[in-house]
Image (cartoon, rainbow, N blue to C red; front, top):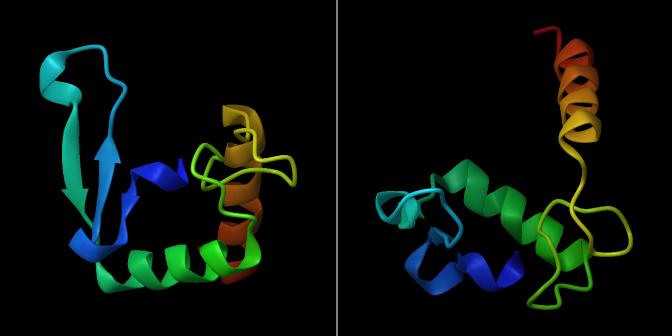
Length: 78
């Protein structure tokens, strides 16, 4: 969710996990920060909206996300 993107710290906060050790802050590489910046500008970026979502701010299903990744990788020749 957008509230988990800590732009000033350049990290993503993982709040939900099956274990306490799974709750952590993940540093981001420049390419991810650039992508997040583009997504932020293009979205309504309400704090509880999912970063990768459809137009309603709700999360994309795992199946739909996998389909998107497959389409992008095919287009990129990967």
